[in-house]
Length: 171
Image 1 (cartoon, rainbow, N blue to C red):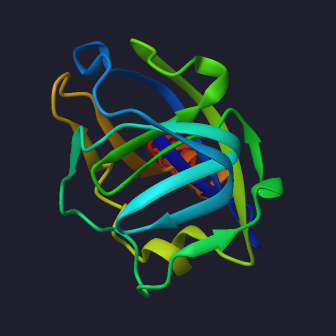
Image 2 (cartoon, rainbow, N blue to C red):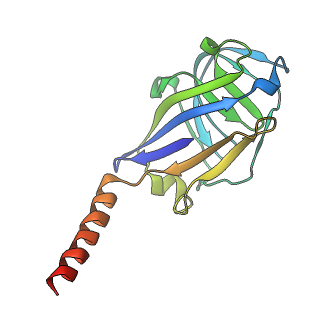
């Protein structure tokens, strides 16, 4: 799962979860030496710093592209914290620390898109909940993206509900 949130000035992507690739054992694996890129756009989300492995096509992009503006975010890997992971088109990419053919890829990485917000990158496309971006062909595992509400928005909602409850109790 990819969650996105902002502090009003910078957009943070956090990728967590796992992908079962046990059905892919030994299928067309290649190594990328010193692949240094952070990318977020309609055809993939990657956070790679250093050596990585990738499969031949093992998944499908679902066709849902919640990104607006058409220009992907590209940055140096210094923006990423955690093990390399991502997908690009039909390929799955993982950190070499997991080995060249892991049965399961455990994901925990985040990166920042400076100067952007959820609204500027996604518009209202994430307002309806998670959007599936990629599906693993063998396991059916998915990579989805969803927005985490700003703390100020959540606080306003709670204050509004409390105000309504207080008003109702006074009557």
